[in-house]
Image (cartoon, rainbow, N blue to C red; front, side, top):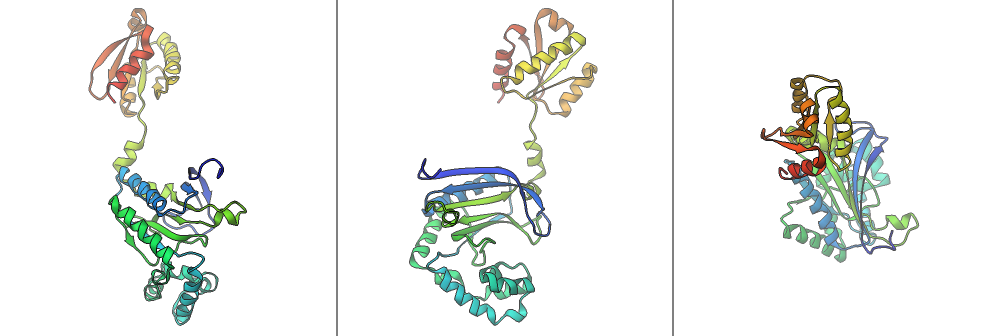
Length: 329
């Protein structure tokens, strides 16, 4: 992929699995949306991807979210900070949880994002990475903030965001929900991972991306938004009589062929019952097919929202239906 474009923008969606203990909003199997921008080290890429994500949340009607950002430095400045942090943590080991004592040996930065209240208090008093960044990392992080400010993408700088994966460097971020998720309140997170492609024997490829859990996202969506995301049928075919049912089968196939979402009566119920079904499905329109309609080769198209109805010629069925639906978009 690196040979095709200097900056490759990707997204994916699919099932993932994790080993950790399940918690509220955190399942063993889950669906994940991922976004990756690969090929540029520019802080503008960081800000663009983050802003796109926040605009996505806004379009979903989500409230009570907070964007938190941090810089983890780079291979030049982070090793020195790691030593300073480890020395500072050592004096608190007896007061930290068992998990933090293990992290102290493997990756002391992870102590900073422990969710245990006492540990979090201690972490707030530890040396801050922002005070130990090299000049390049300082400049990059300042640029990210300027870009975010320029488009009014709100954020706070959180010195304790380190993310759980060691390959992150420079800009990292999390989007936090203030309601509904308990202690594991991160809706989404990501950051820059400039050396990961090389770690897998690829060419030098600076990258920035994030991962978003679908189940966690759904758990904080407003109920009215969840309902609006359910797709409405474009047309429900109301068929009266055996001949009409057979014809409705062919018409449904015809209309689906041009991309319409079509449902139809299968059991041969009364017209009143069929209209109730169309209402229950919140179908936008119904197409009524009975003996007279077949004889006259004129079907009745009804707008279920406004109540208007029109005669639709069998000879120009697809064109007329598409035209009517388009006029109500």
